[in-house]
Amino acid sequence: MGILNKLDAHIEPFESGNILITSADKLLNWSRLNSMWQMFFGLACCAIEMMATSASHYDLDRFGIIPRPSPRHIDIILISGTVTLKMATRIKRLWEQMPEPKYCISMGSCANCGGPYWEHGYHVLKGVDRIIPVDVYVPGCPPRPEALLEGLIKLQEKIRTQSLAKKVN
Amino acid sequence: MDIKEIQELLKSAFDEGIGEPVTDKPVDPYITVETGKIHAVCLFLRDEERLQFDYLSCLSGVDYDKDNLASVYHLYSFALNHKIVLKVIVPKSNPIVPSVYDIWAAAEWHERESYDLMGIVYENHPDLRRILLPEDWEGHPLRKDFKVPEFYNGMKIPY
Image 1 (cartoon, each protein chain N blue to C red):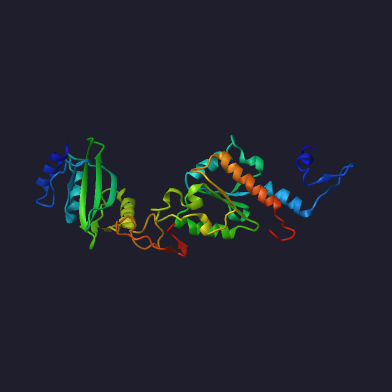
Image 2: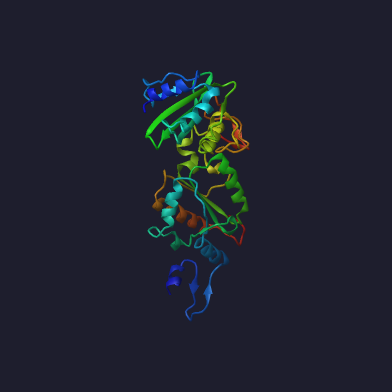
């Protein structure tokens, strides 16, 4: 019954068992937010913290978040680090290849607003939100794994309130 | 061998184009070399029995002063454990320096970087393309007179 206890907000078990009643939205959202596959790439020092988050100590896998090597497999793109103008064109292209529904987390000061390169960084895009829409901003330089996990949980909360069935966000 | 001895050796091998060693600056002592001589001087430094500079540890471009750029060579000899710094100063209006790629292969990427960020053109380099910036970038951004453009491919650059 462990899984049903976890789901009690979404799904009601009948007393005689074997039948569950839920809404399509709740079921879809429950499955979506527990399997947010992530794009497998890092841009700068934030990527080190992202790797630490994925590794056994912080264990990103327990949220169902696993890195995938192709943009066609993924649900979320984690912009982990300084977005240079050269990389920005590649990020935009990756984003365009991702299937809907797709989400973006901007991790760290550089991806949020340019960070330490805000004034003299002729080669840095001052915030990844200038090229792709961002759902969650995680502040920090770089953010600790706990902060990144918090950002991912915030994104899960966002997905939980959305509706795929009604096509309204 | 210290820089004075190296400079005397160079002076005896080359008639002109070798500057005096500068030792009173808070940087490694250096010798200024004439642009046209740099390739021959580097070859001599590498192949001479008493010098054996077998390692180019760094090659960098510098915005030297108002009218000049410089290409700076940090050389080291593993065999004899001595080092030297050479500078070649070229005018911004015609920044052409002979490549030392055929002497130390390490120079290939260093010269590309110096070309990319400073705009120094290395003659006889086998593949002088930008190495860090995008290929369609305009200008050489580490020059002091570089103005950051407003847009790159539709992306706004200033904060």
